[in-house]
Image (cartoon, rainbow, N blue to C red):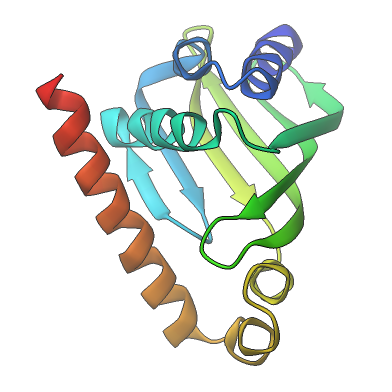
Length: 157
């Protein structure tokens, strides 16, 4: 399963969403602080949206410490990019945990310190409010609305 994790992150570094979602089980459950819980096609479409939005931009990832057996695994990865809403540089440190089933990723949890991300992406206000439940819920509402719009347009084409 270690090779599956490498495949996922190599595809991510190329912004190849289809190769990424090909690593996912049809019943995938994804969770991170920015989107909350996403399941199935919604989780896959989140990666499609993120990859599409970063094309021709300064986005890059670095991943390391891949550990996996037939049941679960983990990886440390870093996302480096410019946050489009503020033009601020972000260097987000993420720890991902996986569960595998039928040779695919069935559960994917990305963990990072939301306040650190918010400070980089939004400055002082992000630092001040980034560790509050209110901020996280508002962020998840906004990211999921963006995902809804993307899915609506993606499914039309």
